[in-house]
Amino acid sequence: MEHPCERCGRRFDSLITIDYAHSSVQYTEIMGAPYTGTDHLCLECARTVLDMSSKDIVSDDRKQTRDAEYMAATLRSRIALSVVSTVLEVFGYEVYPYTMENQLGAVLRQVRQKDTAAPFRKLGGSPDLFVLDREPGEGRFVEVLDAEVPDESRIWLSHFWLSSLRERWPESVLVVFCTPSMNIFAKTAGDLHLEAFPVEVSPLTGRFHCALDPRRDLGPPEAVFKRIDPRRHYILTKRLRAAVLRSASLPR
Image (tube, rainbow, N blue to C red; front, side, top):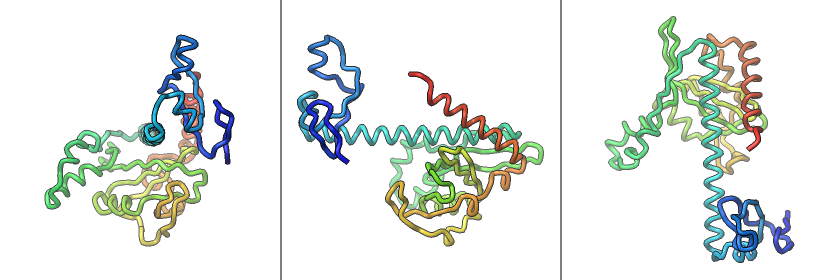
């Protein structure tokens, strides 16, 4: 689909986005104030407005896209972790952060020797949470994974990532948080039958991943966390979803 350049009016397959991160030379000269709008311009007009080479503009546009995608993925991950933690705490579990990946990221990148790297890789891929059920004295590691899927009958997860989790942390519980529904599914990593999952191209990433039916291949969270009451969990999920949607629609 072609889109019109908002400066010259010609139509192009793709346009360059100029937003708050940039200032328009012409606008600033005329108005005496920084440019505060968002324009979608062709490459030629973007060069004129920004006084940059085509190569620099394309490079900068790609960097902005990568940064935006990274921030969106980080936000989804944090929401998933927060919602899962809240659900477990509401039903009487004590939840503690466990992962050391963020704290040891710089250190892990320095480890190159194959024979000594295994412990560091295991720390780097450690589960997100430690969940304690105090009455029976049971503790579980929990790995939270967000999955952006419109249809929960099928989700796509990396075979390499799943096999690594099963091999290194078989006792941990994999919790998949689905957006936008905010439903969660759970299963012990050691019980994942990866050989039974078909491998196909994910429509979201374009890469070969394991295809799972979360209801069949994972199951509801109460199957693992016995304190969770399905009816109360359903009501809680509706309240949490409404709260997240309200916060997302707040005026800037």
